[in-house]
Length: 253
Ligand SMILES: [Zn+2]
Ligand SMILES: [Zn+2]
Image (tube, rainbow, N blue to C red; front, side, top):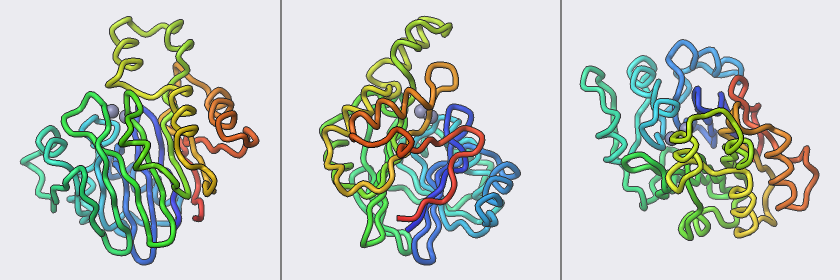
């Protein structure tokens, strides 16, 4: 299995996972032209992707899903709530409704969704497995639940939200209501919460940890790396960063 990011943050998200003959995206927050351009950087054409799993209906995740699905022939897999909140009846896409607690295969990849607390209708995140390795993905969660800890335990790789630094958010220029939303229990994980999650799960098998969905306004890569590396007891540089413009290159699992 290998994985890469096409971009991560409030201006668009897409994570690519490949195992065997199967290529899945988690989210498509870019339109067809931008998606093609970003996939090209990873040596792929948009038609090489089989399906897109959608975490929730916020536009940085679903913005390009239906246009890309129609253009490139992708299957769309999402919860009932996410579909209800994002469906576009003008677009004829091949949609499969998933259960947020039920695992299912897509080609050579087994997908385990799990619900997360976020201000969306039925948001989920995913653990993807190829029979040998498990990749855990978690962004867009306001706080860490016991179920999330159980799901992400003992993964081989993690892509983990480090949205903001609590002090930068508090002292920054966002309006109070937005600060409360981002920092609240249905908003986004800050660096400290992501680090605490790492201390609650089995990390001994981790080969990759990538901090994702960083705010360009209220965080820095250095602060995210410092928080996660302290929790893991590793070098700061070992913790990867998923950037808005570049995402990150292929990582082998
Ligand atoms: Zn988001
Ligand atoms: Zn969101």
